[in-house]
Length: 184
Image (cartoon, rainbow, N blue to C red; front, side, top):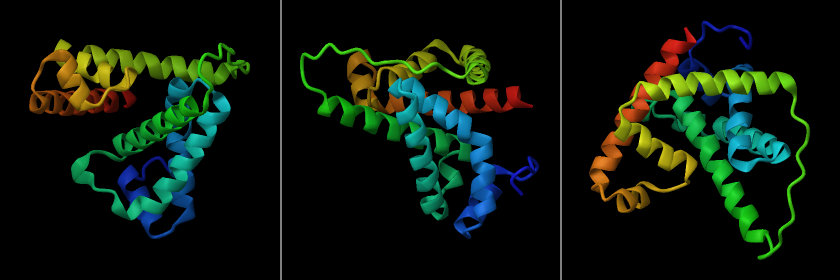
């Protein structure tokens, strides 16, 4: 099962809910690099990013039966989970850091193949983002790169909260569709 790309993500999640370890391995094979890349972009620490990715896979395993396809795709569920976990880790790290310490983080040399993969993924996302209208794109950037909640975005942009939510949802749907089309 692990190497079979014909099996849908939803089928893998259903198999995980039935405790099929091969389904977890297959999901890891499909999304493992992306999990690490998203976590690393937020945390800027490869070891923390890998730990968050592993935690997310464990969480997906435990919560597979709760997946609701009506709320979005498996990929969106996975990416939102890793993003949330990475932000939680970042906030916890910042809370533990002593105030006023200007110590710089040491960077571990990145694997060139992961940099190439990240560059390819980044290009796919940039192309997909270009398909969105300015309002959708700007709101998604505020949410994902400025770590703002929808309420904070509404306040900052003076756009009603319901409108922010609608635009972000439609933007995410269009982004998902564009990314799926580019993957084919």
